[in-house]
Image (cartoon, rainbow, N blue to C red; front, side, top):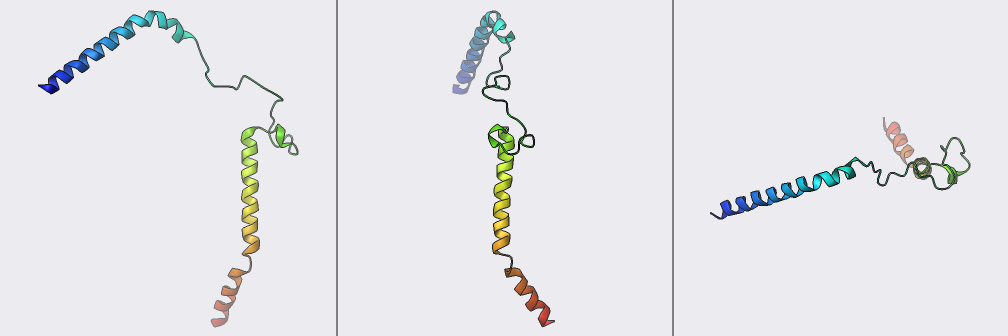
Length: 103
């Protein structure tokens, strides 16, 4: 019994919602035809234009943001990998020499 009442209430709510939407549709139809870009800021340029990093490699302030991120992360990765290779360069060779001498 309670399930039938809840189902009937849901049907009534849905019918009321649909009637509200259909009543508002003619006035809102013009609003739906207006194209809005929202937060798309590609057309709004503020400040100097940004360039690719290979066009002006000595001036990171002019680089596009995504190019700055890629170059920065690559540089940090190279620094860490180079430091790792530099500080661990002699540790693996001793084990190889011991293994060759025992054969």
